[in-house]
Length: 146
Ligand code: DQA
Image (cartoon, rainbow, N blue to C red; front, top):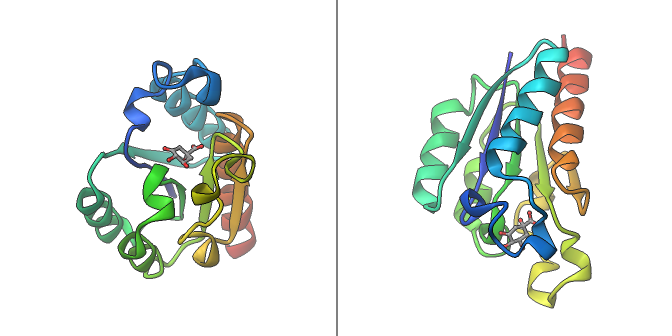
């Protein structure tokens, strides 16, 4: 089984971008962490990042029925994209929404997520560990399913 990890705009700059908010780990570090946790649970990882909404939507369409589950950090698209939400509403497996920072402790415009209502779980403010927790949760749900 494969867990698809989707990263939205600006997450390619992780490590360089606002390190006081997002920390010093790079997206490659986050990917390595996801792969390690997934491997322990017998899952493979399809890890992607795009700055383009349509590319993320195409990635969801490509994997929507084959993926065991999705870990999604949509970046700012979280707060703006009905289209991304609609795409995620079509997938067969569970979706866990992740944010590195505690969006609720930040600007008002980050408090609302278009994705949370279609997610089975939401993890915020735990840094890169949030991705690891999300992958672990997908593994647990896959085990319950099988
Ligand atoms: C983020 C939070 C979003 O509000 C922001 O636009 C991001 C990153 C996070 O991981 O904390 O790009 O999703």
